[in-house]
Image (tube, rainbow, N blue to C red; front, side, top):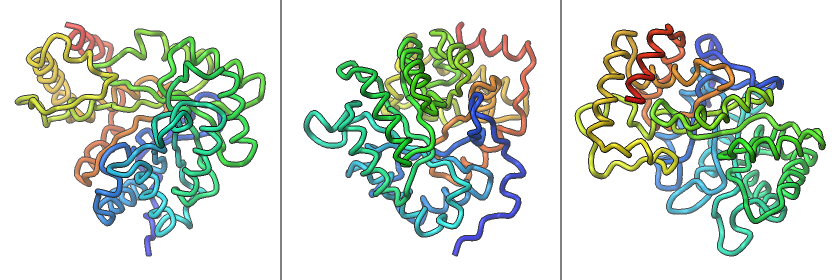
Length: 330
């Protein structure tokens, strides 16, 4: 029987999401990859329980996560919730998403009312919980009227199946448009989850980060380490088999050698700060309090320990920030 550490909230700070009453740990655990039917249940359980013991109370999933069977990431998390974390459900923030392909046909993806309403029920069944804390629209749907999507998400909350609504991968104009619809309905819209890291700063360049601040909402960053690129693992070479998320493809526009040069220069600064490269990369994202949390996807207890230590030093001098900017944009 799992008994969590009494002092689990002592070390990892948590942050308010915009102007809402929702709080998230600075670092959340995501189940995008390697948390599914092909994974060893006991090993993944150890990582999730260890994360909770260290103040990570937010676990991020989606209805289509899992290989070879879609939905198995939610099922794995649901089994752990049922077997180990059920007494602590009120402490947890469980999030999932709808929008990417889960079944064949027109209702297996995107954001029609039918897709949303059936997907939330299926997710809750797999997660073995009565509600999720944040329910995300995983991507913008160009084929469905935005009001239909917003109304369906509002209904999910009013039916008690979610406490808050989030969006993911919405650009500035899409975010502002759906935010206005949510305001009219009184929907508890809280957050936009987007790809964001030192090497991919589109969130800042596009004005999305500023827009979230103006809307008094939060931002959650996924891919904060660019699929591990911003770690010590690739300081010697980037293998030909390395795959980066499609949102960060532009990172390699100038070639891998240029990326390697940047990584090594960033690592030099991290060492001066007495941090690992991954710790500095996570801390850099959290320098702006609009960023409520960053999602790591580790399945290693050692990497979990290393990444959580990023919260020990979140401050950057103006000179350090300028140096990072010069390296990344050079």
